[in-house]
Length: 103
Image (cartoon, rainbow, N blue to C red; front, side, top):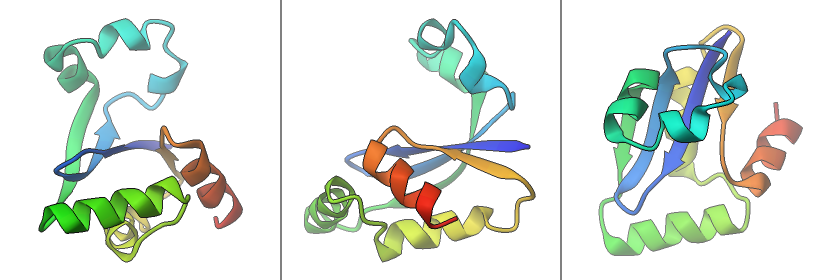
C-alpha cells in the first residue's frame, strides 16, 4: 500500500509520497519531522500545485475550511488515482471525512 500525504501551504498544495508505508504508525513521527532533513528522509515530493495569486490561495483555503474539494485540489489528487491501494493522509478532519465518504 502506498501512503501519500497532502500538505496545504500558503504557496500551494504539496503531495508527498511516504518512503515508508508504516510512516503514520511511528511513535517518533513528531520528532522525526521536526527538521527539514528528517522530513526529507521520510517523504518525497510527488507533485506541487502552485496558487496563481493571493486571491486563488484565499479561495482554495476557504474551500478547505468548508470541507470542500476544489477543482484545483481535485486535479492534483487525480495524479494518484491510478495507484493501487493508495492511502491519503490529510490533517484537516473535514477533508478526511469528505474523502472517507466519497471513496
